[in-house]
Length: 138
Image (cartoon, rainbow, N blue to C red; front, side, top):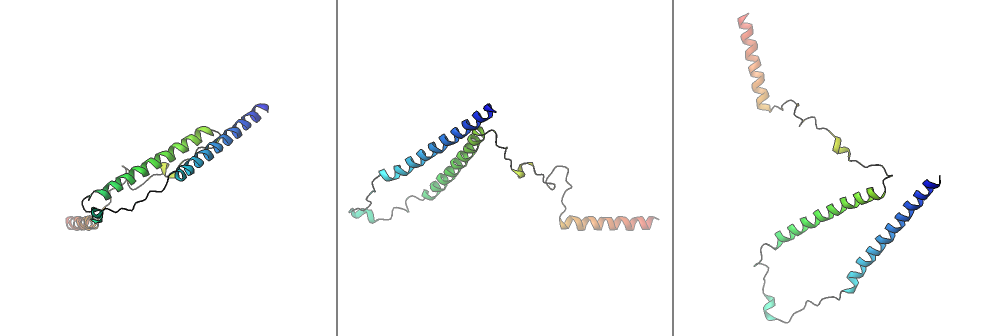
């Protein structure tokens, strides 16, 4: 019994340490934004009134690329967090996606080919002709 109690207290200590570390990270992130002084964006330059946005047409594409990269990084960090939690708590059951073991009976290799409407009509006409030839032969 003493061994299981020691493990339970170790797990609780690890959870407390993880919460404290998470709180410190969130506090650091919050203070980063507070330490930076606001930037004054006003200008007195007469040439600044020109529309320079038309010169750089690829700005939107770069923004899309940056957004895609950001989303990929966030997805990667989410997966790493899941792995870290699974490593930290091996007693928790393994989570699995039900779609990972699902089967698609329509796209499998042994599935019958799907016929289009034209192919079905042609097939029925060919079978009708074969039946007529069989009647004529008998």
